[in-house]
Image (tube, rainbow, N blue to C red; front, side):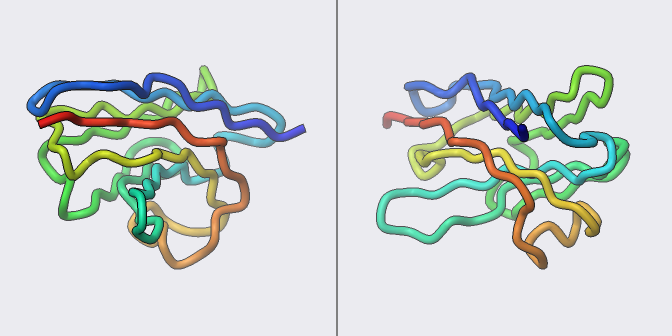
Length: 125
């Protein structure tokens, strides 16, 4: 069956870094755009970053541009989110998602086909 398993979340001080991983199985990973979303308490889920099917194109929300980097490894069926210079407002549950039939830039135009279970990221001030 389809599985998206996130790891790498945790507690970090402001200015620190974390690297999230999402290991995928059960579907044709290389055919999907892979994205990261996040949801903070009391807020709606928002898109954070996405990588095109072959990893050559990317999308970032304005709030994370220049601080976060997404990478997709089709050989390992894994997508990563390197998060640097973290801020308290980055605190959220981060979800990995697989989206078929869109470009990375259009990640928010279609509901993801598959979701991970989420991993908590907490940034202390």
